[in-house]
Image 1: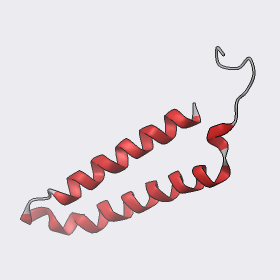
Image 2 (image 1 turned 90 degrees about the vertical axis):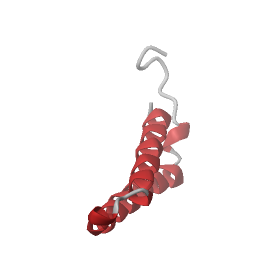
Image 3 (image 1 turned 135 degrees about the vertical axis):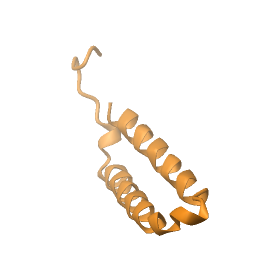
Image 4 (image 1 turned 60 degrees about the horizontal axis):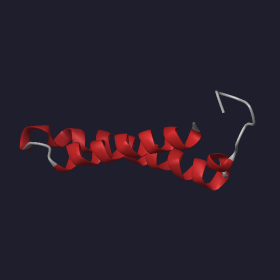
Length: 64
């Protein structure tokens, strides 16, 4: 489940990056807000990667 969450967070991060890269001129002031969200999501992903939580298997839990 954690790996699924990381994958979802990566997808959201990529989507935000795409939005930022394709902002129309009249919305360029929102780029900083998007950059902040992208950085925060990237930080969360990095913390999970560093923690090793993706590798944790809970026996018998969640239908396994």
